[in-house]
Length: 193
Length: 367
Image 1: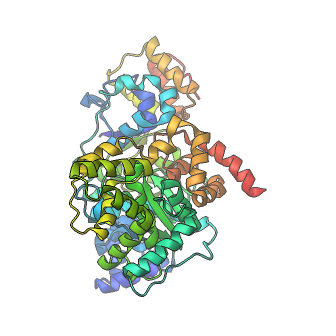
Image 2: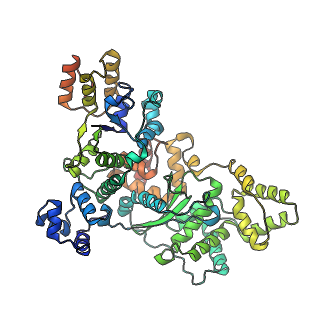
Image 3: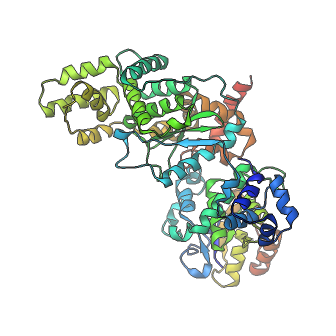
């Protein structure tokens, strides 16, 4: 099953697996809006200066794959629920998703993709509101573990350095069970939170 | 945007589907359907199923307090752009992003309304003269962009600057969100192209009490007429006319270009006015106007010059004081990302830095 990657997850993963959108064995895809966000957002220029080296590597789904009939209805539903002020039952506050987040959810739902993201609001919304249709979520560390298991990447010091940057860049915490799995697979402790 | 369960009941009846049958199709209890009708919002997956069964978009059940009217002034349209359904949809989508913000904002209260029975040139001149005074511009000078934005603010119109999605092939559009008059401006708009559409949308905004006039071709013409008269006072048009009169066409074009450059307006606009004096005037200024535009920035370039948050907030406060006040009052209610979306920062500035600057304004608002 394809995994739809959002901006934060791509910035966490692309140095570790530069071919994640080129080699179909990684089962990853993304959309044009996410790519634009990565290369245009001002704060990313300072925080992730290396991202420019991966411009050719981040290939996107064609528009007709993203914007099918189901996409339009899902997007309308997502937007209506967000604008209405749907409450995050975990936090007790209203969900607040960006336009790109809404497109990602609608695209994942319309195409049966799983999502990888560090954004808790995004995945909680998808699960809470579209439980039956939502194909689930996998953490960036979970994807790494999967790629190691499938021999797509060989873990070494340079990749571990990239992983150490997650803590420095204040990326979202990773699930406990994936940290354990990572240690089992690599013999190294996950360096972030 | 609020869920209206009664719409579900009415639509099911209209489509000949009983509520019991609807419950069966949705695989939920009859009581659940009743709860939805009474106001409980269905989960997203149920909302999708309801929409598919009853063949309406999900937003049908969330009516908005939003009316969007896009108009592309005839002689300033971008290329041959016409108002398409996609354009309307995108414009409405853009406006919807602000529904909550304007719901939280204080009511607009007392706002000026333009009531005119005769949409003729005489009324247009009277109106234009009044509005120019309100903008505080000198008698014989064409309007510049700063005076134009000042006029909008004095009429209680909130200006929002955004990079428009590519389907909205316009410079500006007007809409009403929770009774607030709002004009959206495309950041990509060159300053030369900006003033006229802004004035055009301004006239729409103060003529908005009757929805029936919006989109009416005669109304569009009237808005064009008033906008042109606001931008180009009679004395200025006569000065230009007397200067170019009797000259050869290439000289006329060159002189017009100089006037336009000096007074920051498009050549097309002044030609429209000159035609009132000499209907036979036939000057092809497309090329000259394109060259002239290269000397001017877009409004986005001005806003985001130097990518400096403090400077950006200062300029936005000057150009759109109503908007910045509403945003500053509400930044604590939403995430950083949402504030960035409201301000249309996109890739231009770090929203966190802008919020820090806005918070300084906020403390000013509080005191």
